Length: 254
Image 1 (cartoon, rainbow, N blue to C red):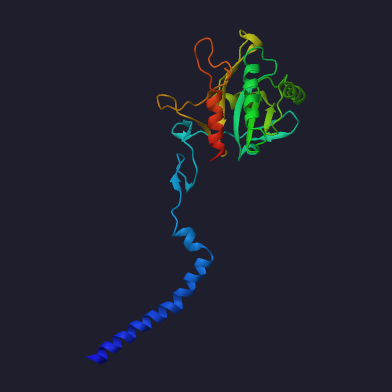
Image 2 (image 1 turned 90 degrees about the vertical axis):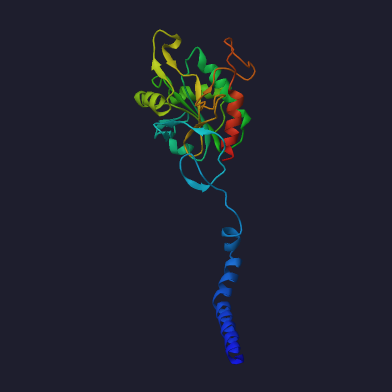
C-alpha cells in the first residue's frame, strides 16, 4: 500500500516538474512583454459603434446621419482652394470640420454664416485637427484669387479652412446629394441663388454627425444664421453656434 502511495507522489511530482519546465519560461516571457497585463489582466474598452464596427473607442453621444439605414459619409470630391491647391475629401480625414455652401457676392445670409464660422475658427485656434470646408456655388465668379481676397476680408486664417471652387455641376451635386444641403439658382431672390444657411458637422472618419434634439431625433444640421451674441432671431428661433462648438469639442476627443 505504501509503495503505491509513493508511486503516486512520484507521478504527481513528475507532472509538476514537466509543467514547470515547459510553461513557466513562457509565462515569464509573456509577463516581460506585457502580454498578460495587456490582454488578460485588464478589461478593454470595446464597443460596437453605430456603424457596427467593434474596436477600442471613445465615441461621443453624437449620432450619425443615416440615409436608407446607412451612416452618411462625405462623398469623394476634388476642388481648388483659395491658394490654387487641389483639395479632396481625403485632406480632411483625421480632422473634425464644418461644411458650408456660400458665394462671395451673396448679399444676405453668407456674411452672417462666415462671421459665425470665423468665431468658431477662433474658438479652436491652433488645433491642427479642426477645419472648415466652404464650397462656392458661383464658381464662374469665385476664382481662387477672389476666394483669397474674401478669406483675408473675413479674417480666415486656419490652414485647414479651404474655400473651394471648381465644376459647377459637381458642386451642386455635392450640396444637394452629398450633404443634403439645398442649393439652386433662383433669379427671384437676392443674389440670384438660393442655398441652405445650415452647417454640416463631419467627424474624423468623414461621417456626418449631430446631437439629438429635444424629441430625441437627430438634429442633422446646425443653423448658421444666428450669432451667439444675438441669441435668438426675430421669429424666436435660438442660435445654434454654441451647441455646434460643444459638439465640435466632443468629436475632437473621439
